[in-house]
Each structure stands twice: as C-alpha cells, then as structure tokens.
Length: 115
Length: 113
Image (cartoon, rainbow over all chains, first blue to last red; front, side, top):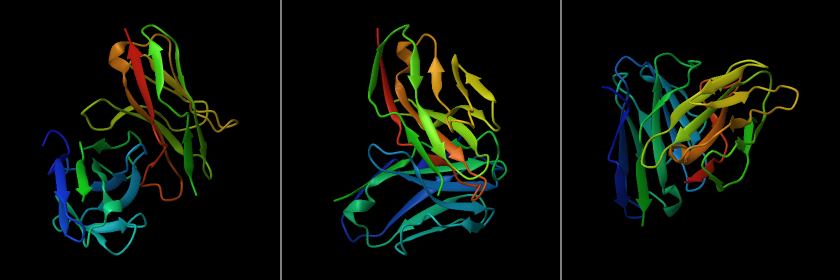
C-alpha cells in the first residue's frame, strides 16, 4: 500500500480483556517496528521485526504483550488481560531495510482505551 | 541507556517569529539524530535528520545542527507559519540497539496569526 495502515484506529476494551492490533506495512518493507505513545509522552519502542522474526523485543513491558509477523508482512500486537495502564496510542512503523538512515514511515496509530 | 531531553512545551508564537526548540541527548558513540513532526490528526513524519557530527539537517525552512561537543540537536526556523503548528519530537538512533528510535517527550507548538 501507499503507507503504513493500522487497524482499528480506535479500540475501547474492558479491563481484563484480550485485544489484537493490526499493522499492514508498506509493501516490500522488511523491517517493522511497534511503539507505544502514552499521553503527553514520546513514543517508546516495544519490538522490532526483521522479516518474520522478532529481532529485538526488549521493549515489551511484560509477558502480557506479544507480537507476531508470520509471513513477513502484516503484524499483530496482542495484549492479554488488559490493564488501565495499557491505554495509549500504539504506533507501527516500517522501513525498507533495518536501521535505514532516513528513518521510518509511521502509521497513524491505534488508540487503545482500557476502561 | 540512551536518552533524549526536549524543551518542555507548550510553545506559542506569533506568525513570522523565530523558533528554537532545544534538544539534548545522552548516548554512547555517535548516534544518528532526527526531528519528527506530528500534525493534528496525522501520523509521525520525518522532518529532518543528521547522521554525523557537524552535519546540518534541513527541510521546509527548518534546520538543526548535530553538535557533538554539546550533545545537542536544536531545531530552528527563521519565520514560522500557522501551518507549522504541530508536536515536534527529537529522536536518536543509537549505535547499540541501532534498530530502534529513542524519542524525547515532544514539544507542542502553536503559531497564532
């Protein structure tokens, strides 16, 4: 596609529920990144994929968070037993190659609200 | 670990005023430095970048110079416009863990006509 697409754009869920957030990167981009942006803060790194594998998941806050990219294109961020503190905008970005000097192309994000 | 500290906002200026948004960083070695902009209702967009000391990044009238001696990457524009109203993020990509960006907290800029 023309840009990085994230769905849904907004998600409201109850505390304790399971959610999935989807990211569709730019076609041909091998590297994919997930970030989380809390209100009034800058984005924080969660996980980076190179192809199908998670090359760096050091930013995942705990084992309730998990992400997959089974075919090296679309990625899904999964959050189990959601907590109110998980409320944030979840951003996805992709790049043609890892560490591309020009930076990354970001999607518009999924705003997750846990009530 | 690597970190970025930005000038706290919000910043409000009149059209045609001079803009400076301060950014300093802490990192090992020589990181790459970026400014991203987030316009209302849109995603983060790369504004400019610099990959080595003394490099100057520029775009849309904005400039920032990579200063290794002061570990800074301040954003400047000589004459701002209403359309520059947005949130600006300074970021670095470190030498270690080089596949991720580390962002500052963002500075909200409002330009009044």
